[in-house]
Length: 299
Ligand SMILES: C[S@@+](CC[C@H](N)C(=O)[O-])C[C@H]1O[C@@H](n2cnc3c(N)ncnc32)[C@H](O)[C@@H]1O
Image: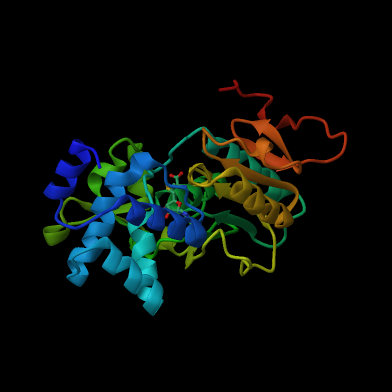
């Protein structure tokens, strides 16, 4: 052990060895598909360290032995929640939302008698599914647009925040006033400084826990739009490929799949074609490029 590592270890509250890190890395990869690089060592120490503190344990080895031996579902969930990264914001990568609005309008005038089905597959604390819901309300000029939004995430803590729909007012400081007035109520008294998404908008979304790695997803019908943004970056290519193959089975000819700005699904699937702006559709043989973006500047 180098002198620096030895000093770090001595300064730490809990015994945390390289073997412990490698073990955590392997467990979270198998359980959630998340690939942790060595650069995440301190993050892992700090986040799992909180679990040790909560359980009054002295070493990572003791904690990991207990996790594996007792196989307690709640502790597995706490372990997973501790290792996810949940960064998100309202109307993040905002270029996708006018595309969504156009697509909804197109679907509504086309084949759809049933509600338009949208899946937000890494919903985090809810800002993304609520942005989708607000976009649908605006597209149909109604607080009851003909959409059904399913929002899922592996992390139960963020899903609880998402379902409550309560945020510090700072989270919406960049949002247009008209949107804020239409879709939020401001807290008063002990809720001062908080805003809540209005009930009508919250009711457009069904929140469920779902691990994208699960062999079976609980869906019988396909989706018209799938948001899978800024989660694939945590997975390696084989894992990404398996998940995309399953998305493909849930897409119709005119469904859209939206990725995050740094995610490229063409490297992991032969079934998709890129429309631009990290928006994909199913590849159709000899398909011409969709006209979805012809009136927009490319980013
Ligand atoms: C960085 S956030 C992205 C949130 C949102 N999609 C956005 O773009 O703003 C990544 C989310 O993916 C979730 N996640 C990580 N692994 C997952 C898995 N195996 N299945 C489902 N969700 C997962 C995390 O819990 C986290 O909330």
